[in-house]
Length: 246
Ligand code: HPA
Image 1 (cartoon, rainbow, N blue to C red):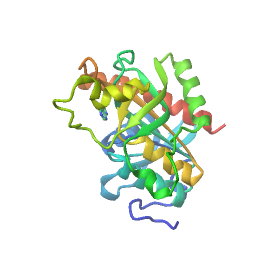
Image 2: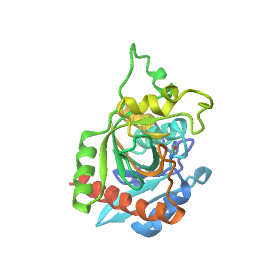
Image 3: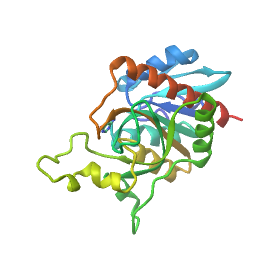
């Protein structure tokens, strides 16, 4: 695939091997300003700000995915195929659907189950199981351990729906309860699209999320608390990026 692409106006050398990917473009700028040394803006098509700088001497990029599987599908496809990016790490937030997963905990998505039809394009005669890169996963786990972060590794749900029409259904039929019975830890909206794109491109992907909403108890983080728990996940992500470079 040639560059520039329809959604990224940059050159391959503008990106590091690893791209950190929050959903929100403003968060991408915040990360560049607060965590990277000498950040340079490398893309701004549609306001999807992409920056490259360094962390502990390693060239690292950060660019937003937008919300949902179609959006992360586009950005990850173009980064992998036109810009030579090897590793994409989503750094997002998620809603916990199990009582034992607390606010501020980090969930590391070993697998990303989904209600999205994204896999339809691959003409598979069955269900594809979207999984994380093992190399990225084990480095993220060791970074969490070193930083003393509370984390859980397992399956999450990538949903196409933020607002689910469960009104009036008995509890046993509510969507979140059904997924929780299968051990799903939390819900977000992008990981499965990223994992499938990485699989098809022969590249690496991982999704880390902090729990911003506890959907069983109804608790949610305040704006301030979102910032501090986000900071811990950022350090995990950056330390992981450094380990991937070795
Ligand atoms: N649903 C989907 N995505 C989310 C949620 C949620 O409840 N919370 C944070 N990201």
